[in-house]
Length: 251
Image (cartoon, rainbow, N blue to C red; front, side):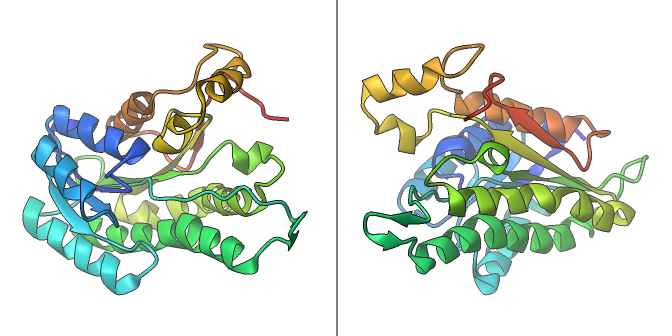
């Protein structure tokens, strides 16, 4: 596969890692459809890159099915899905205000884990319709976990659980889809300069960056995007989780 012939869905493509991925893919000649809840910024990013936008709730089957149908119509097919949509709460299991709110835990699981699987399964059904390449390849699904799946910090029970689930389903999903020629990979980012971190004070950003062994800085979303592009084009990568974190091991 080549990015120049890629027809990609990117969830969470209106900002952060998803936006960087959408922009990078488009710069390499790919067709891109952004799936996002943000009906203001989503169309703007899509217009900037010459792509398409479909307002989407990744937790809703009908919403995702409709978005994928729009993408197929706009791009004449789909062969790549990159799942970047996600949320994060910082809440301890028991804190000053009492037990962790169950609805916050459930919402995190619903968006980060269930939403990822929902998009992956529906995208896979569409990718499976594509004509195979010489080696039987039809496409690839790239999911986003986090180093919190392995090194979850206090206040990250919900987030770490959701991302641990994404890691855990990588290999079985790759095995499930092997016969259809669809690969499944997961990227586990460290601390990246996303809109959430950009809103923190400069001093806090510097403290976070100082914890990264090498290079001692926050990750650039463009680096995530380039790794996603490499995965698309490196057809022998399958069923694996790749950390991109500057050797950071959180403690």
